[in-house]
Image (cartoon, rainbow, N blue to C red; front, side):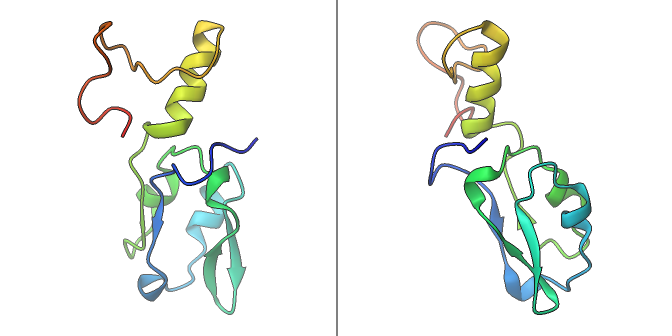
Length: 101
């Protein structure tokens, strides 16, 4: 399952990567691959923004706002039995600040 193109918060700094491969081990979506002794992104739109890669990267080469953005909208929709919804539990006036941006 891919999410919307260009909305994922995942950022990868190749210059900080030492190629340890922990992100490859923990990513449930196959967002990473090994390339020339380092890690590279396959397709950022596969990222569900769980934060496992960032939490396990000893070099800080990966950052992601875990639980926000498209992944949260998809999960909210599934849990509520409808379309993707990024209300994040906010009131009718909209989501809480920083929830879905």
